[in-house]
Image (tube, rainbow, N blue to C red; front, side, top):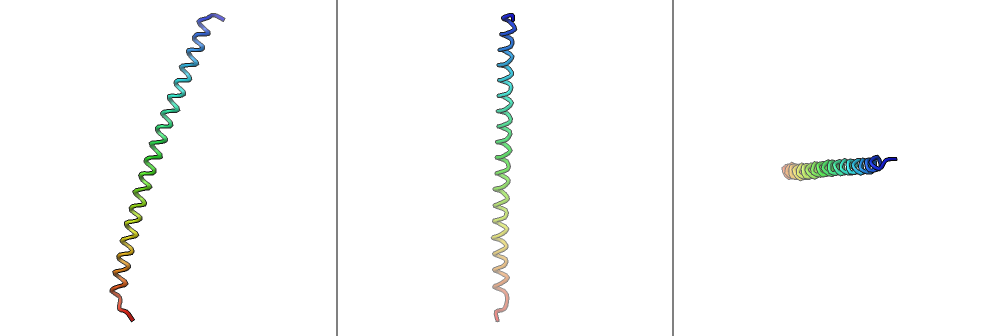
Length: 70
C-alpha cells in the first residue's frame, strides 16, 4: 500500500474523529440549554402556584372572618 494512502487514511480518521467530537459537544451544549430552560420554567410555575395558594388562603380567611358566628 502506498504511503500517501496510509497518511490519507490516518488523516481522514482524525478528521472524522474531530467532527464526531465537535458534533457530540454541540449536542451536549444544546441538551444543557434545554434542561436549563426547563428548570427555569419549572421554577416560575412553582412561584406562580405559591402566589395563587397564598392568595387563596387569604381570601378564604377573609370569607371565614365575615361569616356570622353561631
